[in-house]
Length: 122
Image 1 (cartoon, rainbow, N blue to C red):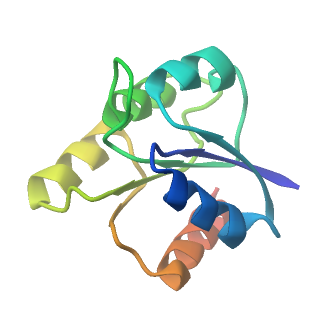
Image 2: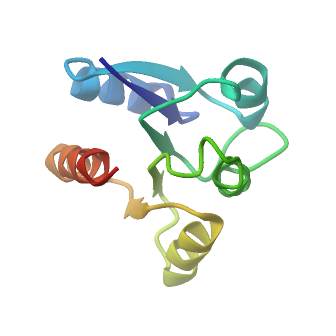
Image 3: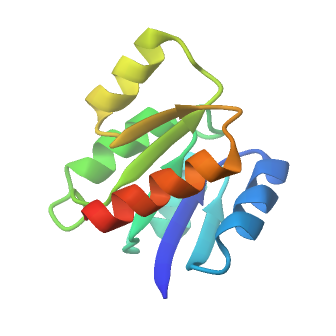
């Protein structure tokens, strides 16, 4: 089964993602940049969903940038999913290395389609 990492600090959003993706993915969750480095930075995933605003020392954009410069992770698709919905936020996400930017709230069908698209593109 494919593996997904969701980096999201909102518990309710985590539960929605769990229900949405549990059929097709083994889903891991972390809620901060610190937890990512402690528990998940050495893992490989088929796709990552990353929130921009996180607890911890670094933002989701920082994590995206750092993931994309690692040789064996640079091709991992990353969806940046955030409440920050201005054009500059989209630009910052793409420049950090996100493969797709989606603004919250996003309909479940759109998120499912985005994940399928990026997994199939990989």
